[in-house]
Amino acid sequence: MDKQQKAAVVDEMAGQIQEAEAVIAVDYRGLSVPQAAELRSRLRDADARFRVVKNTLTERAADKAGAESLKAYLEGPTAMTFVKGDIATAAKALTDFSRQAGVLSFKGGLMGSEPLTAEQIDAISRLPARDVLNARLVGMV
Image (tube, rainbow, N blue to C red; front, side, top):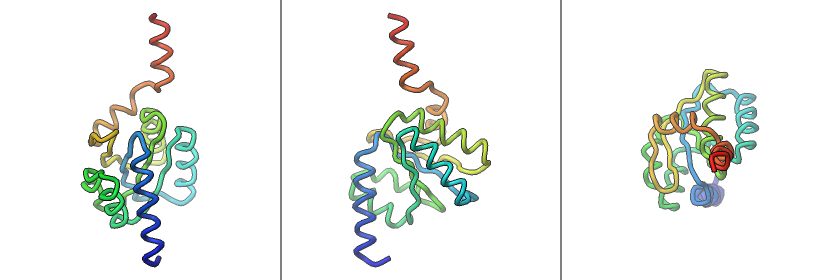
């Protein structure tokens, strides 16, 4: 990859970080290519995108997007999940896939501009989806 391609990747990732409602960093050790394709398909249904990029390029993108707290999670193999929709649905998809495949572990992330720990993301994955919460609220009214 030459300098121009790297700069394009950094720009694209910085845009994805800024546009995302949440960003989740996961350790993807042991994830096969077919498993990655299945996970991407599940996350697409949750309006999220799973992406593996070199940590150095992700660090540059985090700096450019003003999300320096993401840099703390860039040790070892790290994949980023950019969530545009409901974070609970995306976290649930990651958790379900992790249980089924026996790979992936949460490192941390960002929701808005607030950093999230792995434990917080795990707790979010146990929440009902936004649509379910809205339906419950309407039902109570």
